[in-house]
Length: 126
Image 1 (cartoon, one colour):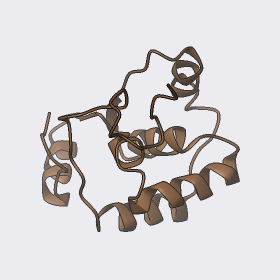
Image 2 (cartoon, helix red, strand yellow):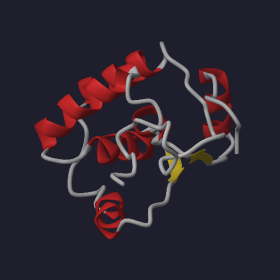
Image 3 (cartoon, rainbow, N blue to C red):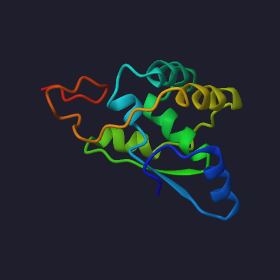
Image 4 (cartoon, rainbow, N blue to C red):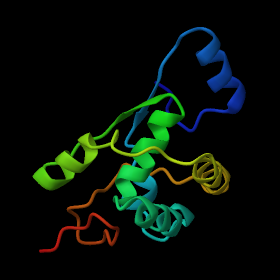
């Protein structure tokens, strides 16, 4: 498992050697930073397929050959996260996510959706 976004040479070397890349917390880009550029894009693509932003990013991970590792205590989200094979992203959607995602790196694991200062898409409604 890599601790940051892998470079294209790293991804290619892994593929050539049969090494699977896992994606820990693959929804950080939309869940923990609601102002990032993937939020709007994943919402737009989600409307096209009638799925959530989370499903779009998880499906993108699968189509790129990664193994996404995510979790939720919300039953509806768990069901959505398992429903990733009822649609397939068009090549242009994958390219858009690649391009926009490469322009913005956000990693923050020191706080979460349950905290008051968090204002992202998965914020607690309390």
